[in-house]
Length: 298
Image: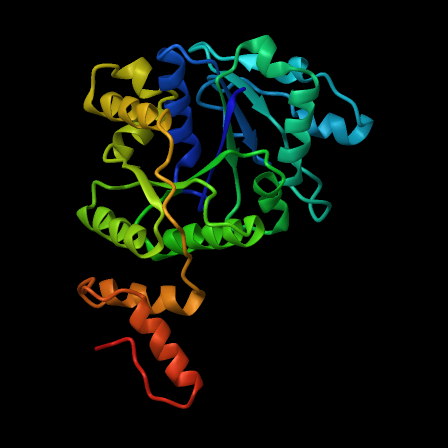
């Protein structure tokens, strides 16, 4: 059975470009890969398909309630299979619900067996992990979640919201979640995400130090494999792809609540991480609730 991985994170972080390069790396390693975009703009597979317009499978499904998935799947020049789910009418329905329905269609029509798939990689758009975005995790569609995040507060906040949603709906700390650090050319990004990982238990898949090069080439319509296959960027992408083959460690997980995350983030904004854990913050919140004067700032 193909391994299904959900890639999510804050919009605009470059997740689709990163995923496209990872998909090609896996294909070059001999694996069968299907990349599925779930974005109203239908840009997830744009780089792999060289700008070719893709039909939107779920748009037809919503009109006819039946569809042949094979008619919407195209093989890219590098051998990655591509599928775009398409958008919904503004203000109508749930974009993320498409993921669960599409996966049911793929299973019913035995697409993974026909194409010899080892990986089905879902590119999930959106910053808000609402109930709809949580469905693919709750109903068992996804076997793992990769959260792409930079060291910026807004990006980490989105990652923490996704973690919170997954823990809530799974009612378990065992669902495999890993972080892929983007923009790690900035040394503080690695420091921040390492600390966040320590606080929450979320395993770090890797730190991407070649974002600038990847996106520079993507702006020219090329992946690192086409343009610079022997570069350090290509080597790092391949290394990350190889780590995708390994099972996550499976640490116990805990998300921060909104206030904890805000106070924790102020430590680095104020000039350092410090060595405190979030436990003192939790104790002080409890003291404050009981009329005490606790503070997270020692």
